[in-house]
Length: 192
Image (cartoon, rainbow, N blue to C red):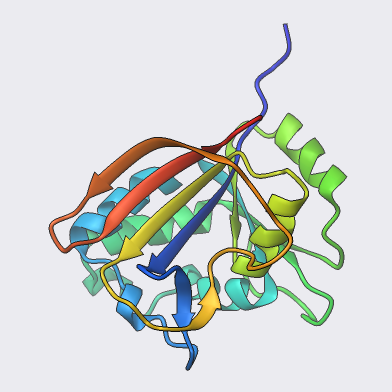
């Protein structure tokens, strides 16, 4: 019997019009409240390795040593611990070095290496950042897509999904609404 393969999940916190940041690069409108943050924590608990592009890594490395963490709510402290315990792989040709533990730098995104990682990992993987996720979707590596949509239209900016050349059929697995108007949808990639 073959061992189960870990999943690769693309999880995106977006505006309702599917942008991860607005035209000015701002994403403060996406800050989750307690209910959404606690839910995201539970989703992230199964992730053993984060795959990041340079910009997403530089944003997320905040969680290695958040200022005044002990004064933060428990759900924020919980997320910091989840993030710190996971492995990270950063794909960048321009980043000189990584600054967080449990992190390695790769110069090239090689789909076969990700397939091998999925086959040997005891925990699921997550791909972060729209550009890297687009490459993973194009290569057929993504197993699930999680969309957490904030109740805001930003009218433009950085799209959460590739805008050209990638078609992926999805099957809705789960949906949830939160008190603040945020929605969560979980999709499987059809044909996987």
